[in-house]
Length: 336
Ligand code: A2P
Image (cartoon, rainbow, N blue to C red):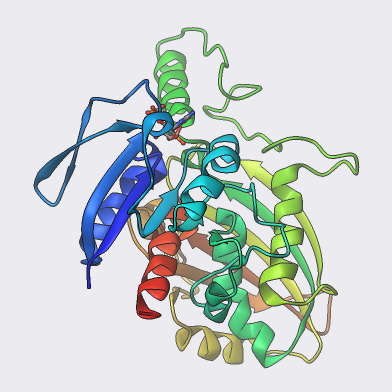
């Protein structure tokens, strides 16, 4: 059976990858609607060799849409996702607008797929990119022995900030190599040849919202409000692929050998863990353009008897956003 699909934010970094992944995975697309703001309405987008005209979301009638993939920011989702749901579509929303609502499931396809069915509002939330890749790797370990605490520092690529953020890294890099002024616009300070320990808004507790997403979403997805998460989220001058230095403390000790065994058997995970130059995943050598969550540098925490360190890398636009959204759509289709 064919499914009528709308991609909202189709001209964006995530939206265009959603279309590519729908095609790659031969999703049973019936009618396809590519939607964006009036700025890009009238332009065209190619999907499986055919041209589709970009339509203005504000003027679009969602009647007849079966599944809507939203990735046009929180404000757009808050305004339009309920309208699409009311018209009968299942909305899969990549923004943070609904993630923390009790009546909206937050789903990583390899971790809690059963939750997809639990959607009284017709809305399913796609997790934050950093939480997504972290939990694909940690859930198999958590099932072996409960994770009590997670310390995580992220190294997040600029594509997570959308097209304008990628353009800024390119522009500043070119400017600096030509002895010109890198003038920050999209980021608060220079991103080229730099690091920025600030993603999304500051909260009252001194953490950023990007950091708190790791706390809130880990608990909701694993269904365990007792898990302690201590995050630092950092933007780095990488185009595609987020990396994470993760230290976990489990109830019972998990040896590095056992962790490797569990992760080798885990869906969506690839272990790259040789103790030699290049024997570990990086954004450029492994993650960028690929679907897996790559895990390496697995070793015991020298400072904790039940601690394990891991290095987790994945393409934030693919598994971190577009791929998981399409996988959730596949779960919806499989319901029949
Ligand atoms: P547009 O091309 O019309 O600006 P990115 O995250 O790469 O910046 O992409 C954001 C996506 O969200 C784009 O497809 C953008 O479309 C879309 N978008 C942004 N604001 C709106 C809006 N108000 N209505 C519909 N789509 C929007």
